[in-house]
Length: 79
Image 1: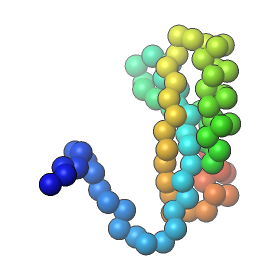
Image 2: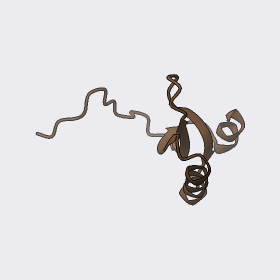
Image 3: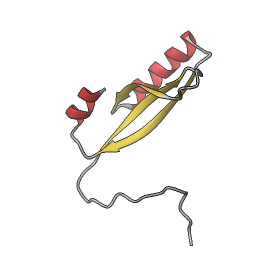
């Protein structure tokens, strides 16, 4: 039997979800990661990550994928 990772919860609702990519930055100041940009297009987020990595190489960058039950317009306005 396949084991799930710790903290795994299955999304139980059958309604459509909005998936998007988030660029997160860690300035290594002890406060952790914060969201820099969100987009539905991975290419936009990746280009900004490369640009920031070139300008400020001492920070850490990562791209994560998130989902929400809300529409894209309300998600975009929240950031």
